Length: 137
Image (cartoon, rainbow, N blue to C red):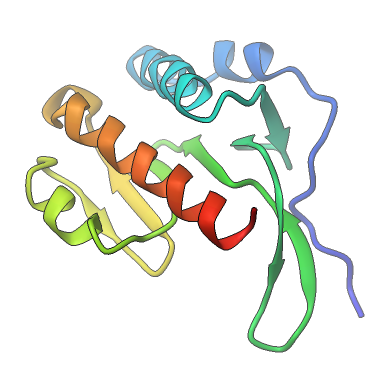
């Protein structure tokens, strides 16, 4: 059985964000980091080489394997900001008011933070936090 590849590290979140290119994505990463830290009350931790995570929980996959994963997180990737948030009953309604974005199974993708409603994004983070606290007390 292989070990999970995405694990918390001792790498500096500040150093990671300082090296993100382009500069706009770097600043967006800093904004997301501050937002998620404020919402979760958790210190930002690097998970693997490119995910900034907050808190942790034991995620059990469909095949029954368990691995730690951040309760909330993001990665400032070149193509888009990738946010890792729990879905809730409110998610669909909130996403309708967010602004330009795409989604996949467990990710929210935002190309430009300045084009989304930051109050709605904060509400999505709060709903995600509350859902994770409910599922994994």
